[in-house]
Length: 280
Image (tube, rainbow, N blue to C red; front, top):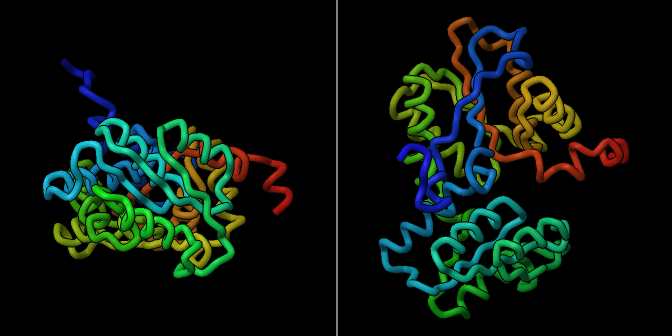
């Protein structure tokens, strides 16, 4: 039956590519956004959570009733918790004390057990959320530590899914890929696949604090909503701001794909709050 699924995990991936019209109207070329908020967990992190856990299942690294452990500041936690629920695993997440209460409540609603850790310590401090997650994983029998920042399956997931989808959706016409760099998984995996297909494709990685200005990125995030009707997160605004800054490089033959990694609903108290913006 068309449009009928066995569970929510079958909705992960194959996200739409949506043409950007108004925000790019003064630029040469064609511009499309790969909108990852159409994943059921509303972010691209659904891809790695499902991929890493299913790979562990195939390799016998996690058994029924086991425990999934991860360090997270947001999106990955939502995705890991969601996949864990469907697959029958327990989920333990280590988060920073800077994580908003509403995010923690959301994670708990998805069945996750939360450990809140101090943010004012070094990453190798035993109290940090990185070390806390590793300690929990080491002390929990039958557990799997996702470890997204240092797990090569993060890149592999995007190589096999995001990159392949972009190539197919653009029918090989893509000339530029623009994406923010967080763990590096999305852009590295996607770029690897695309470069193997066409070495001439240009890859533009965006550091939200280095490549583009934070304030400009925040306003561009709101501009995307107002001009394209897409509620996306801050990193999408940063990627879009980078596109604007290099717009003179594009020609009529340019086919530009920009990855919008998550939904704007998780930024309502910040980027989409006039009071918060005025305080910055």
